[in-house]
Amino acid sequence: MFTLSGTLLGLVGTGIISLGMPGETHLGPGALLVLLAAACSGTTFVLQRPLACRYGAAKAAGWPLIVGALLLAPWLPTGLRQAAAAPQAIAAIAFLALGAGVLGYACWMVALAGLGASRAANFLFLMAPLATVLAIPINGHVPPPTTILGGAATLAGVWIVHRAYRRAPATDLESR
Image (cartoon, rainbow, N blue to C red; front, top):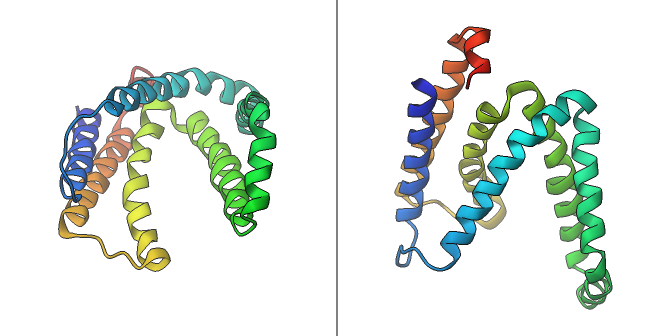
């Protein structure tokens, strides 16, 4: 029950943040694609856990990245031409590929193997508050009050889920 309430509180926090954003809030044609992406991501979490446990986080993270790079190879010439036209973007691309991509995916595999899909997925709610905090020194963007309130609700939801798993017996965790 606590895991469900914590997850719902995290969703409410995310909703508060989105309602506080400028512009009109409506479901456009891209909303279905976002829902499809979430369904694919959730399915991937569940399917990757046994692989991460069996083969280790490095192999379970490495193979999807290698296959993804091979599938994107037909667009490599275009990407190289665009990078040559904007050399200042190369450092950003390298950071996104190595820092956010490889390192982030490897950390995700370690968390997935150790925590399980449902518990690890709740920690994804931390991305919005962390991005908000990082935007202050990087971009000088000070968040509006709704973002702070939504972030607090999101963090509380993550904390509730984490506490529920710490209190639950090991056999109960396997059924979640």
